[in-house]
Image (cartoon, rainbow, N blue to C red; front, side, top):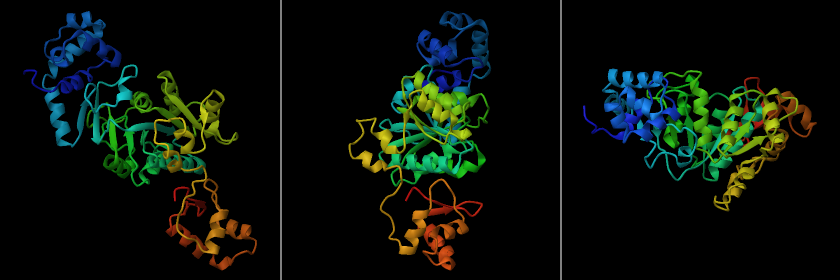
Length: 378
């Protein structure tokens, strides 16, 4: 076997050696002229001279010896599954990610990474409240409208709502960073969402195709989310959560941290409220975030929208307007609640029809308990 394969294929193969992390792999690459030389000719003594421990040196040499054709097989697997392999020295590799401590040496990608993307991360609780869902959708949509690429982890809760908010923008792009292979739908319920993200942005991972999710992979995934973004927005996070780890990673790399405030009585807002106390910028809308980045187009702050989420939409009848004005983004109201609050100002027998019309216009939505909320993305 010769070294005619692209350098990134050898990098990808080396990265799969047990016990060889980003820092140790960087030592290897400083010592050898190329990843191909390390893979094809590296000895235990070479790896020791590169700065690896004896267990690491034995592990990587055994790995390369036993799986000599792995670089070729990785390329073939990516080609078969429509996945792009991107090496750290390639133009498509995210510029900001390259600057972090121990960046991944390769990325696997479904969709399209763009070097010109201006990325902001959005993270939060898997157990989001209606308030958190609306906030994530509103801010994700506002950022996308302003030309920002929203980066998140495609998990349940705030991650998914952030991606969905970005995708509701006509030109919105979003990137999902996974703790498994990019061809693995995790969680399963987000299979269709991941397909949409790949169509309108990118699904990326440092793990090869077919890799199942493992708990240890997700903290590593978080460093990519924070690392490729100018800042991280946290929406609903308990005192101890992966979202706060992502925020800490962002801070350690000198990136901005933003937090959406929540109720002092909500467990899911304890982490975000504490972040604000510690100096994270309080944000109410995408416009508050865009204002921190003067290099974005000046008119993008207006495109980002205000905190009420209102925009020019369908014309409403007087009855529709009355009902719409009663509804809130984060507190579902039942039909009985709405009738009570109208206080005889409308025809109670017609409320169900009015709600149906508003729902068909995309202005409101209903939950499993038949509670209605205002859709902040109009």
